[in-house]
Image (cartoon, rainbow, N blue to C red; front, side):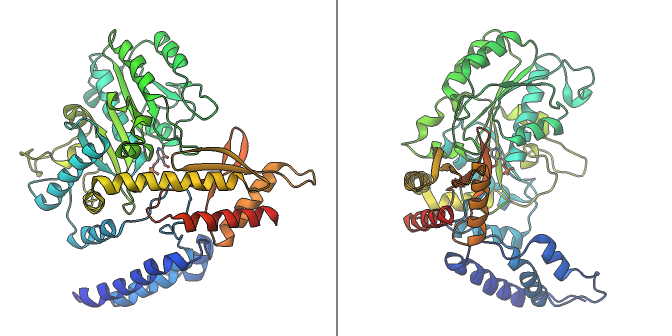
Length: 469
Ligand SMILES: Cc1ncc(COP(=O)(O)O)c(C=O)c1O
């Protein structure tokens, strides 16, 4: 029989989590063990006998820690990784302790109320239509999928086709127009919602990855039938924004002739610049969209897993996604989250969003976004001065570089890969790789509330040393 021994388990977790978190500034950003090594070292059959909770937690930490990435470090620049703000982390722990199923207001009013307030604050912070439906998803992938599901519903309904009843059988073909550099989660979302990849028209992008609006206009002139236009706020490599105001204008001019047009924006991290008065202008026009996807676990610095799907028209979101059954509560006076996410049961992942926004306030959020952009600008300008480094692009919080080849005739990509590996193994900073205009590149995403000028200098020194070696 298991004990209700929360005290010793939570005391152990408290001790081990503090050790981890407080150790992060001094911890190497390199990863000690691979997943395969950890599995080999730890693999055993499911034990016959159980173990005390605190012992389980210690065993878990001993097993996983060599393979943990220092995501909370100010010098962790992989993917687009926000560290956890302390208040968001605390709220996240409570979410697990409370163990509420945040989908029905009637049954779980405490967390649904908090999430409803968080949703309102997100709309305020991003200055998006306050009447919108907000779904707290697992991430940007989930948020893009939800937005595109809503779009699929709307463009087919405008053609008299009820996709929720009839599915896609007998539906008019749906066109999806995207920039050539849209994030791959858009392609996966299209697969998941039954539209596939053949429906996609890819619009050429300029040298920094922005959709060419004239080509979009020409494509929309050519295309007939239900259409979803999908733009991007924040390119995952260089941080560029599609020209949203011009795209909104093109979409608007076509809407005047047809109702079966939907405008979605993937702003997984870039949409957060709307919280900064000095950078808001990068996204002018975004407010004209029908749906938006963003992530709290990126630039809002909540723990994983939290994306945010926003759909202007609540009814469309509800019709595309919502569901009910005899054993479930009927809709009440507060909207049920079950109608804006694809999960039937889920943790209250919007609660850390409330805590992050409460801890930051409007000014703190703007400051966090601005600080990340400023530190990225520092990083870019200092790296550009390092001999052998070529700054390929920088925008908002993203920095992309390549490394010139040594004079031994080997391809420069080889040297860039070598430097990337040296940085990842060196423990001082952790960027990741990509390709930029066909060249191997190293990308730094400055998305962590903790990154300061000391982190930037240490990173520049590490790059300079790796290039020299
Ligand atoms: C522009 C963009 N869209 C979507 C995603 C996917 O987000 P997630 O990994 O949270 O699903 C990312 C991730 O970096 C992104 O940068």
